[in-house]
Length: 443
Image 1 (tube, rainbow, N blue to C red):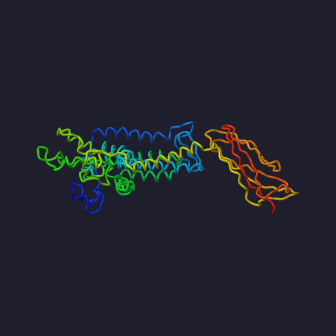
Image 2 (spheres, rainbow, N blue to C red):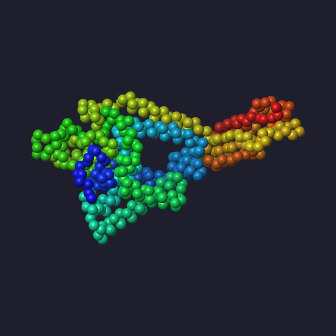
């Protein structure tokens, strides 16, 4: 049974009917200034997503998270698990800049850049329009009895959906160097379910970002707003005493979440600008000024003035800059190799014929983007003898190697707390690191 509601009810979500059941949204087609920009942007984002795994820089993928090998490739740079701490500062900086964007222009990320929007509006909804027609035809087809024509349309649409879901998931797994069939099948089913059926429910119900808006925004945050001073009271176009809003319902018809923007700021608004283009088209036909629905702040609507710089935005921006600056600084100072001198498990030392022996292990990782040759050299005091089975090591990028080290010294020369020193030098970068190990002997 179809819900009797014709317009959104503020007492419940539009995607739910009066019984709490799912109500499908059929956004009408819309064109205009913002839609042209969005069409180009969505195409570029999809090109980046599907093309980036195939791009190689310095012979390696532009972006690859190799979980098994614990390697990460980013735009020609190579990182390993020991560099993971950089991700914390990078992610925190990016998160604060997203907060700055939210404080400045609200939920615009959701309507313009979020993968959910990119795929639903840029791929799946377009296929739906191409096969089933505009919104009123799609709605009529959904309610019509099953005929040969309906079966062909639905079957064709879902076959294309399944193919795109598999290809989308295959591309996603390319970022992680994974190709297991079980993962491919499971995630493909999830993608198909999400982009075919769940759609705007994810934005309205599951996504926590939308529910954070009230904590991140203020009266100066720019949203899509309806100018009630100019639009009210609503009436027919020929009514000279009414406002500019002719109550055509076009802004509701094109909304992907089904809200009425004239009811004010709502959590479900994705800032997608569909209603702006729809309203501007009506205003053009009526010969009235554009911008009855527009991007503006509450302060801008009330006073005509906007305030962009404010304490919370400065604070968020400084936190974001700090996170990115720390990540960049640590990355630039990142050594070309990592070396550790570790004591082997077992007996801490041996004593034979007046000679104390300690056993260590040098763990060396080449963090260069290219192969490198490393030199190992004893730089301990004269009484300490270091036996190095390998004094020269050649390692490939991100290759790790362990080599044993035996340290000997006469018992008469032993002093508690003595240390051995081994220099590790990178012949390519010229950098070196001196490793220290505490010697253990009889008390």
